[in-house]
Length: 162
Image 1 (cartoon, helix red, strand yellow):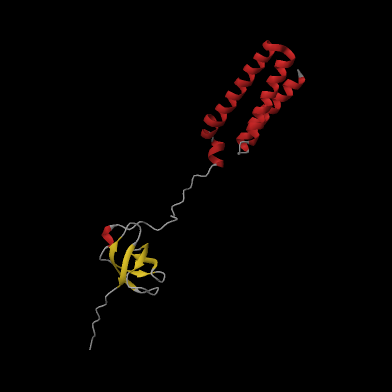
Image 2 (tube, rainbow, N blue to C red):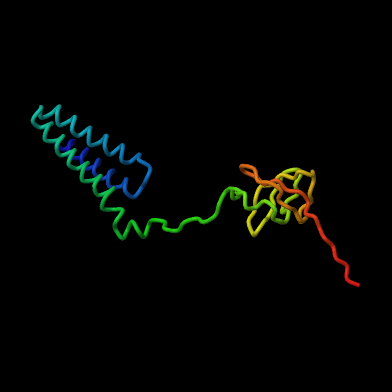
């Protein structure tokens, strides 16, 4: 009887620790400990004692899962340990849309023939139709493809003041 109680106590303790230490290993070992307690109960006390141990193990497991997945996430402790901030950044440049055609921008990186341009305060992947364009040079968007824009060097109109 002592071995059964020890296995159940270890199983309950490991299931409780699973809430604090994520990863699943403690929960699995705790479940196996409870299963071991049930198997020892079947061996020592026959079908009647084993059935009682199985029922107790199922109740303990159900209560532990309810506490872990239903009550704990709503608790003040869980809110204090959980992250609530979100990341607003992006890992990829935005996808260009057709409204960019005809606009001008600046080459952020050298376009040889691909690179990054900035247009209306946003950065896009671009392809230069006219070969190399230096970083910082003004560019004009001539077309929009699926994931990039096609650019050429911007046409300058110079006015002289005398």
